[in-house]
Picture 1 (cartoon, rainbow, N blue to C red):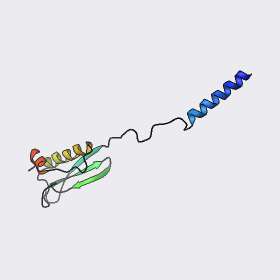
Picture 2 (picture 1 turned 120 degrees about the vertical axis):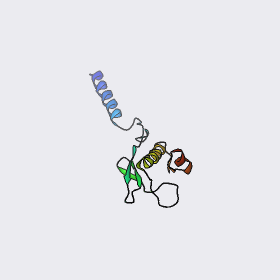
Picture 3 (picture 1 turned 90 degrees about the vertical axis):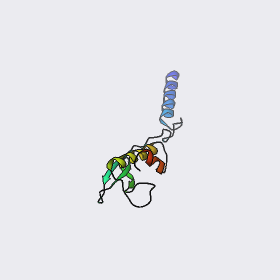
Picture 4 (picture 1 turned 180 degrees about the horizontal axis):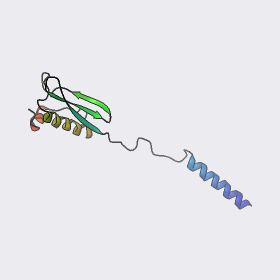
Length: 112
């Protein structure tokens, strides 16, 4: 009978320990979650193009002009806006923030 009582006590103890917070658990934020970025190119009223950058469903960047350039001129083609938007998304995925675009990068992409 003593053995049976001891067995029930031990079983109850180990069940309580496993169900409680006595044993350490990894923090909820220990595994980084990669954000999903994407872009959408749009045509503007002046027949130029721009792009929006999204993090999931949330719009992060609304770019109507060629970044890093003076004035308020949009991209002349959808292809040019697509190239730069792709570069910006690439920088965001590499955790480069802010994802600035230099004149040299625009030249390398043949946007300028």
